[in-house]
Amino acid sequence: RPPKRYAVIGNPIAHSRSPSIHADFARQTGVELQYERLLAPLDGFDDTLDRLHAAGGAGANVTVPFKVQAWQRASRHLSPRARLAGAVNTLWWQDGELYGCNTDGIGLVRDLERLEAPLAGASILVLGAGGAARGAIPALIEAGCARVRVANRTESRAVELARLFASETHNATLEAGGFGAAADPTGWDIVINATASSLADELPALPEGVYRPGVLAYDMVYSAQPTAFMREASQHGARTADGLGMLVEQAAESFAIWHGVRPSTAQTIARLRAELAR
Ligand code: NDP
Image (cartoon, rainbow, N blue to C red; front, side, top):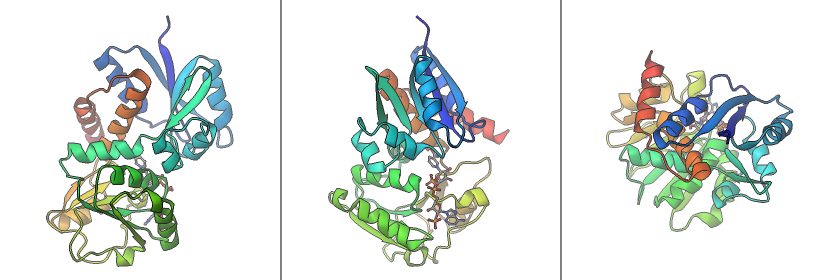
């Protein structure tokens, strides 16, 4: 039997590290698979997905800018996580039907656990109100944090996002606002940058006092050098991390869904870190 066929679909896609991550996991677990990059035209996500399926595809990861379209395609069979996130990054076919899950949020949670940042009872400031924040918030709530504040440059989007999760807060407090009101007298345990600011080497315009010793400042963006957000936080004594671990952890969750075995991630994170530094 030929190995099962998978792909990551996005635009752009040339720099996606997903094929090498899944190849690592396959070697480690003895699963045989084929995993390629598929560049979909901006108006051609559906066609690209259909062609993958017609060619015997078993599943796909989906990245920018198609996660919402993937959610719509899998609307009949969404995991609870995907339903809440409003976006899908993991698709698979079963008995001819398309299923969808979102592993970004749980990937973030796994990475925070790896970094030994306790989530139970934590106060967490989430910067940003786009797709990444939307995936993260329900996963953080599910992991038992006590308080989440969503702060966004465009305040109304933060308020909208918090409203969306208003009935899913369990015992957590969920707040929303602009960057200006994001300081907290009792202090945050974790500040997560789920904005795209670091891609432009910019900083979310936060008030003084957010970053301090004891805080973990986590940027979902990853790069060879510390991002502007990480540099600022670290100048004020906070511990910092970038999103490379999240990238690998979300892939491990996808792999577990597809193949029924969860690979370990440490070696792959170390390999990618070394490659980034080169
Ligand atoms: P979206 O385009 O959906 O959202 C962008 C968000 O960033 C908005 O909240 C926007 O604010 C904010 N923003 C953009 N530029 C700036 C800026 N210069 N200053 C302050 N805020 C800014 O993007 P996503 O939510 O999909 O992705 C966000 C980031 O997370 C990306 O950089 C992506 O690479 C990263 N990511 C990493 C993952 C990983 O595995 N490591 C997984 C998923 C995402 P406004 O509403 O005001 O425009």
